[in-house]
Image (tube, rainbow, N blue to C red; front, side, top):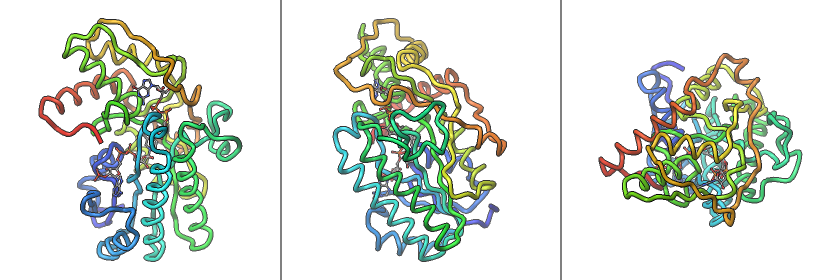
Length: 314
Ligand SMILES: NC(=O)C1=CN([C@@H]2O[C@H](COP(=O)(O)OP(=O)(O)OC[C@H]3O[C@@H](n4cnc5c(N)ncnc54)[C@H](OP(=O)(O)O)[C@@H]3O)[C@@H](O)[C@H]2O)C=CC1
Ligand SMILES: C[C@H]1O[C@H](OP(=O)(O)OP(=O)(O)OC[C@H]2O[C@@H](n3cnc4c(=O)[nH]c(N)nc43)[C@H](O)[C@@H]2O)[C@@H](O)[C@@H](O)C1=O
């Protein structure tokens, strides 16, 4: 990629899209549109947009995204919106023979009982995690569309499987967010309002892997520059932590000194998710932001965003 390369980052205001724009700004010609300017579920409008801008690279970082609560509340929306968004973009890009496209799957689309750490070969080898199976099926369709376009049209499209991501510009909605931003918000509000207790969903026993969005963006740039294979490639740290341990880290970073109560009436989801990242580290990428450091920076970003009355929830 060079300064004259037109790169369309679909979803440029999101957690991943905004981090990727930070990483690429000044290095390429960025093409962007908000969902108000271009609803990517509209195939005709999407085709007209790509025809007008003729990007050489497309990154599909636009999607309906949310945590375990959001997926349980609206599975049809997660299936339908994500199928429509990715089909609109990839059908239009294929018709224009866009040479390079990066589709984003997710670690949560691996089978619930995948062998750990999860290798890319585990995809579609067993039953999905029920709490996000509709979303996962949409994502699997996207991964397969990339594979099919490579085989049928010979375009150098690729797909990545990021682990749980966090960082500035995340969705901090109280119930539709992922665990890390949800707890950053909840502990921040408990300190601000003097609450003595914070509720964490589930048992606290599940384990998750967390990668900062700036590290994820660097990984996506590495993939755009040096990965050309039909198989999806994992993007993660290879290290996991329990939800209870994560809550302690966020409580410490927020200055919360009260009690943490686990609400086991809420679902735990997949018992453990941690990726095998040997393929992407073989390309020379490694995560640089330690979880404790990333949480402290995210808490500071959230405090500043709330103080500046910025929108922090989607
Ligand atoms: N967050 C995570 O932990 C992980 C995310 N991923 C994947 O990474 C990608 C990005 O996720 P993330 O950055 O967290 O998501 P966010 O929710 O932070 O951002 C999603 C973006 O998609 C855009 N968007 C949503 N619907 C539409 C639509 N109908 N038309 C146009 N734009 C739309 C939004 O645009 P606008 O702001 O203009 O409304 C928003 O900027 C997704 O594919 C997700 O599955 C994969 C693994 C983990
Ligand atoms: C990222 C990837 O993976 C996502 O799945 P997930 O990892 O299960 O998502 P999650 O972050 O919502 O939950 C992680 C764990 O954390 C616990 N938990 C505690 N307290 C809160 C809480 O307050 N909110 C949430 N959301 N979870 C909580 C929660 O009970 C669960 O045990 C997909 O939705 C999908 O989006 C996807 O692509």
